[in-house]
Amino acid sequence: MILLGRTDTSVIGRWWWTVDRWTMAALAALVAVGALLIMAASPAVAERIGADHFHFVRRQFVFLPPALLVIFAVSLLSPKNIRRLACLGFLGAVLLMMMTLIGGQEIKGATRWVSLAGISIQPSEFVKPTFAVVAAWMFSEQRLSEAFPGNMISLGLYLLVACLLLLQPDVGMTLVVSSVWFVEFFLAGLPIVWVLMGMVVGLGGLVAAYFTFSHVASRIDRFLDPSAGDSYQVTTALQAFHYGGFFGRGPGEGRVKAVLPDAHTDFIMAVAGEEFGLILCLVVVGIFAFIVLRGFARMLTEENLFVLLATSGLLVQFGLQAIINMASTLHLMPTKGMTLPFISYGGSSMLALALGMGMVLALTRKRYGREGWQ
Image 1: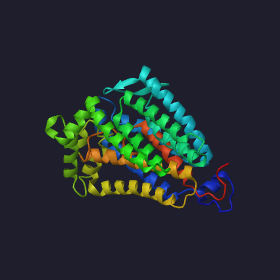
Image 2: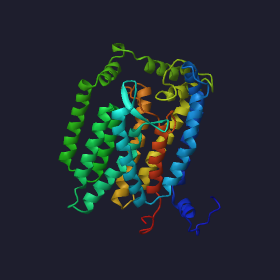
Image 3: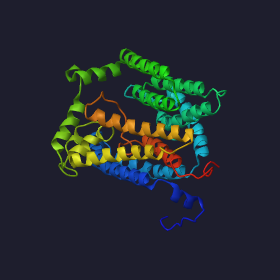
Image 4: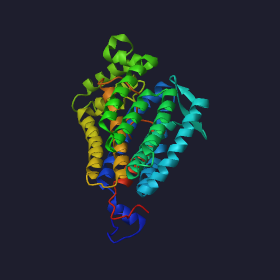
């Protein structure tokens, strides 16, 4: 591709000279770090549950090529086609979420997975990026035509998604979706009165979740008072960071992965901290920050409201998910079972994140006049 000239008018040629190659490089670095940490953390977990040594490694690597293909294919699309893809994806994900409530697989007290052709899928992961784009479209259409009830349609879709998530239940993902929706609404010109009302409703929702869902109350209680319940995973993770120090114990020398149940998923940063030290952890944080800030920087001169809102929503979702995972591991907030983008084990999560970042690459491509909207 580097041999493609600027005069090349093919689809690939136009893509290569308009896509943000720095963001692509950062995403490639995240994928590489994720592959390294999965190979370091998952074998011990697989042996502990009686599976083959490379059980999780093989399963993760099966999803890796399709995820990279999704990023590339989606990044080729125009903003108009991104809207179409998001609408179809959102409809399919919502229908699958409804299926989970009827015949989904219950794991750890939550019904979030559905089996299709022998493959376990978590539909709510795909709702996050697609809903962010659909909501952005509705908000932008409302601004273009006051007669179009875009805000109300977006509100109705948000309430539908939130209800389906709470029925699973998945309070953490509900908070992420709510935050993304609120940010987009705010950027679209949400009146200050609605902003204040949204903050009050949000705080009320957190209080209601505490008294409604026992697992939420338990996690908050353990965060405020570690002696109030089992805080083994968080305590063990913090010890791993302490043992790793600045440079780490070295690849394969960590001990936390042998005793931490979720070392390959929610607490994979603890493995990184113990084996590779503070240096790798800071590199990972820097890559996440670069991707988010780079995306927002490219939006500073964006004139199309839909592109601005959709990209902002996707970037907020991406960054917020990373913050929640790392903050939970460091005991800076109550624990939440949320993957670290492109690093934690999880097929549905990787494919959904690939879809979302493919959309970001597509929407942040340079466009001239109406080029790219066809």
